[in-house]
Image 1 (cartoon, rainbow, N blue to C red):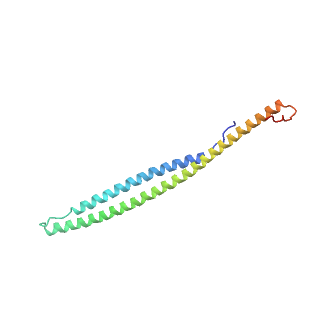
Image 2 (cartoon, rainbow, N blue to C red):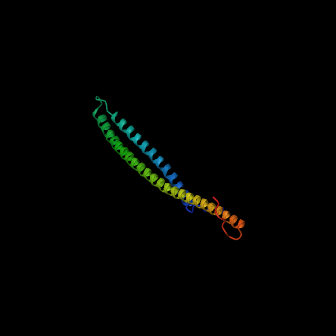
Image 3 (cartoon, rainbow, N blue to C red):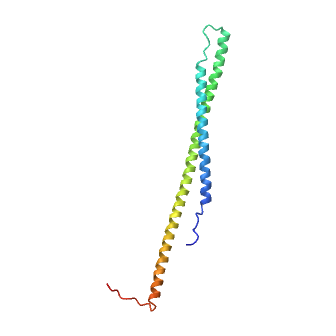
Length: 152
């Protein structure tokens, strides 16, 4: 048999696989960051609820505690917004990973079809070679080209 024809899109498939792996890593990192941001927001919210000045505190201490609580509440709001943005970013990264995986899968299917077509072509070529060999042998045993009558 001759040289087997290669899959012309093999370099593209390698690039797609690498892109899929990079997208998978980015999605994992974004998910981890979103989880960490959510945890930080929850920790800050829990710390905020424990910020209650003692009832016996003087007015200036109570006022300072309320100002600090307001600032802490703003921090919690910002942390929650960051957590939400991180979750949205993680979802975007998962969508990109899914798209990259679909592109890779499509090329892998094309490659598989190509390999199946090559196998079919090789099988057909082998069949033709056997047929040619049988025909050549028959011609060699019957030089006049006459067929022998069937003797059933």
